[in-house]
Image (tube, rainbow, N blue to C red; front, side, top):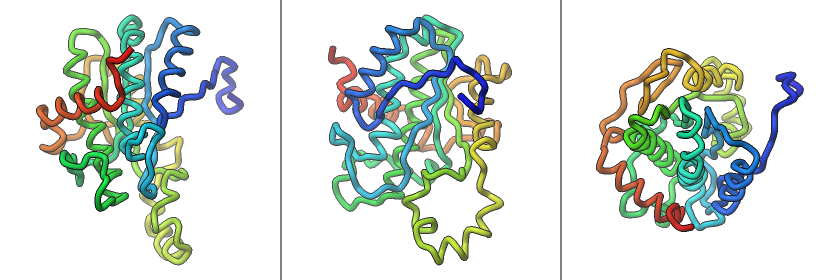
Length: 239
């Protein structure tokens, strides 16, 4: 609020690692507001040690995908009633190296923090495309955004940052490729606000440009399977 000079900025708790918290947030939001024009699914975790959400979901999949999946679906009625509206999902170029571990989606065996992170971001890409297909004709668009490598504490679990010597030796070389939060937010704002994207949906943007997707991210059958898993794990259709 101090930075924006906008006194109409409100904060409400929404813990994406807790489906109960997400549902409580949505209930409170709908009591307080009747409109929602922009939803930015920005929160996330990266390469954290193996842990689980309150609902037993691997933490990165739970926070980076299942949480936004539930939150977005619970807010769709308000977004549609407020159309034109936009949904912006924070993704990462790490999705390009990922596969959806269909046999062990929750990564119970041989956990790999980097692989689990990449999987969660590929899941977000598949969610974005599937949701875009479901929202055709509603005047609600959804796109995914890669903000770049950003200088925030999301990297706190990466070895290059936790080890003093690697940080000292490698950080100066990496610095030119690292964005400040304000700079990284520009593509997010572009996706949320730019008039040129009024009718653009189901796309992936980096540096404010639409980028080509990998074949894995364009797998519609996999996207539909993942959606069904999301419905089951979040109890989306349970009152």
